[in-house]
Image (cartoon, rainbow, N blue to C red; front, side, top):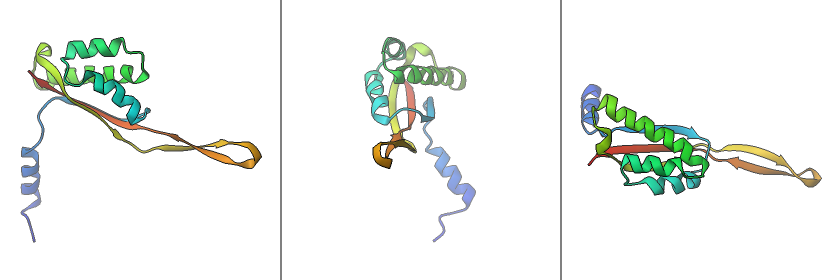
Length: 128
C-alpha cells in the first residue's frame, strides 16, 4: 500500500530529473499549429543557425520563439556553465493551453463562437 515516506518519494523523483538546459513559455497567444511551423524549422539545428532562421522568418511565432531560445541559451551559460558554440536544439514542442472563448454577434440575433487558442512552448538544448 505505502510506497515509502513522502520525502523518499520526492528524492527518487528528483533523481530522474532532466538536467538539460531549457526554457518554457506558458500561455503564449498563438495556436499550437502556428507555433509548430516555426519549431519544426529549428529542431536539431545548432543555436547560431536556429537564431538565424528565427531572425529572418516572417511569422509572428518566430519572434516569440527567438526570445525563448535566447532565454534557454542564457540558462545554459549561467546555470549549467555550458559553451554557446556547443549547444543545439535537442527538443522543441508546443502543447495545447486553455482556449479563450469569445462571442461574435451575427445577423438576426445569432452569436458565433470565436476560439482564441493558446499554447505552452518548450525549448530544450543539449551539448554536441
